[in-house]
Length: 536
Image 1 (cartoon, rainbow, N blue to C red):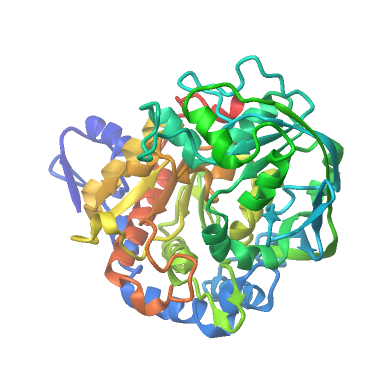
Image 2 (cartoon, rainbow, N blue to C red):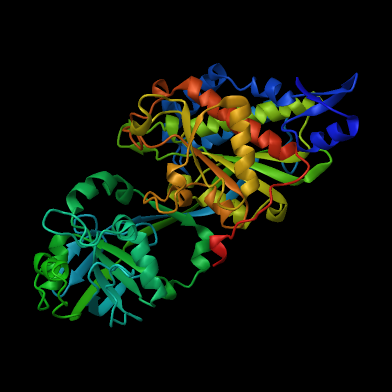
């Protein structure tokens, strides 16, 4: 019981802002409010989370790769669980929101530089639709490191409009490997090639050939994904491929063949001039570069699985809880079970759905509706959540917040002395209210250490853009991303249920529930009082 002393009028006012409370009893001027959230949060426990995860992350589900049998089995398991909770199908017929996908496999793709032929994966690579058509180029422009900042600008007196551009990865350094310019911004450019390609797009370039000097070691990590089909939403085919930006990563050997057709000769000499702040000898190389894509395309469907718990007096407004239940599947005979990524979030979502549904069945249901949605396609580019945000079943204008759970069952090196923490990302990006609600929920009920390291806009990992909450945030919906950090088993077959810290998982899942409970029951939705960067 929460006991708030005072006159009835004052207490009634307090009721509208008191966190998580329902049910008023009067006793000699004392107003008592029963905190039902504690009762229903207690249904989220380590034992049931473990039971679910032992199934979701078992070999039977084959790593839950989107479009594969294991993902379909996981979807059925989740839907059957929702049905067992007596949660009605969202349209009276199904728990699935199906969405159309395209699987694309590149076979004998090659690239000729002059008369010399190079092969996909061995000498160059691109991701998904990074190259959406055959390329036939007669010249390429060298733009150094491809950095366009105040501290270092490779585009001074250089027009790259309608050009294909050759750039180095990283940023300029001295012989000891230290950045020539001490700059946080320069570190970001060095860490994230997307900054370079986005900048090139804004300058009107047609595409980029990015030299990956760590090609062999990098390829050992990504070869599996390149050899397996890329995936995209089928509706993306409607975009104008002729206008799309093309991004190709090339090996040092391939880069040196290109550079040898100019006065720059090779990577070493080019970098030496750049790092000594000397101008590039020859900016434009007249050279035929022909990339021929040979691919195989298959159309299929993915599934988001929805549990909709209808609210009472504010039922038209919706709180959305998400977790992705897909993972990266099999690599040969090895199964990537994805216990933490994101089995931990998936089973937490199941338990949160159970807690809200139990409250509803016992007459203490939420005022706002709660949508617990497990999505697929996250590992392929946030595809399931993107499809939902583009084709919402419940109007986005009525969606008050999204709480997204992605990897919450382990601990990282930065917190090796204590597992009682969680990274929060995005809580204050759009709404001061949401951030405060989250902080209060934690201090009142859970008391984890809330770590905002990855919430820093300058953090090079850019996690804010890398999970399903992103597709809600870009529509101006306040979000929180719950994350316990990367560990040595990330995207490896060793991410197994026996390594999950179930007591920690219980605490974080309860924190999400308490936060969702307040969002679903308070008088006012969190106010969006921050500028949305996606509107710029």
